[in-house]
Amino acid sequence: MVDRFDTWESYFYPETIDPLTGNGTLRNLLDERHPAELARREYVRTNVRAQQIEGGAVAIAKTYDGSHLRAIHRHLFQDVYAWAGEYRTVNMSKGVGRGFGDVKTGEVDRYLSDVHQLVSSTDWRRLDRGDFIAHSSTVFAYVNQAHPFREGNGRTSKLFMQHVAEQSRFAFDYARVTPEVWNQGSALSGPDLYSYAPDPRSLVPVFDAITVDRRQGQTGGLDDPTRGRSALRASYPQAATDATRSTPPAGGIQGRGSAPYTPGARYGNDLGEGR
Image 1 (cartoon, rainbow, N blue to C red):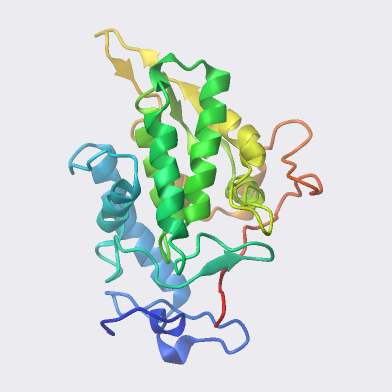
Image 2 (image 1 turned 90 degrees about the vertical axis):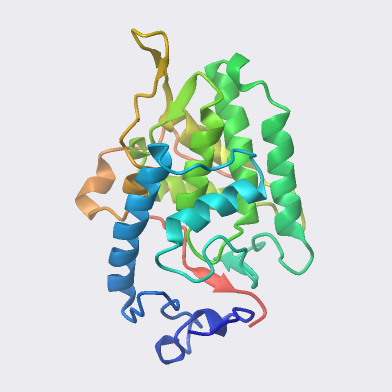
């Protein structure tokens, strides 16, 4: 295991790197070289860790900033990656267009500072459903654009958004959309090529679909209808036959200058920049 992860290639086992894509199997504490087996073993471990967070068995300081995200990521991936809880050291993108937050210019910290400002300046308890969806879509768009970790951004950000929603009258049921719908909305929310601010409009129908009421329990406390349903379960790859059980809202998800959502479209693999 290398001690430093400061280049794109340093994150991978050298013998697994595909010369055409530059991707390979991420170095891991399990010393697993096969990507599919690593994904399976990673899921088993991170699902247990996610349930610990969701069940309150581990204390995560809810500061709604980079430290908050790092604490979630560290707990989730502590059994799998040596860099769990640490920001990536390389730039990344998915597909064409503008990449995620630039680690060389401090953009990751800037986006997460914006996240903190967006969350802390909002009175979440007073939001009606429409405003909650709009605010949540914007917060997630900034978290997604920061994309602070080399792997595990989606799972970490879903738990983070659950913590944000705890301040409101609403909760998220991520199983109400397929991974394809989630990924399409996320991909289309990125900034234009030479812009900074994400555009959350493509995420609004996604968050509309996953937002559910927290119902008042008999004891007077708030009862989360999604309790016990791990965010990671909704993130785990599904069989093709399962992908049809949820559909995007009428008209599909449509971003700036994009075609309507096409079922089966994927967010794409992580790509290094300037390798």
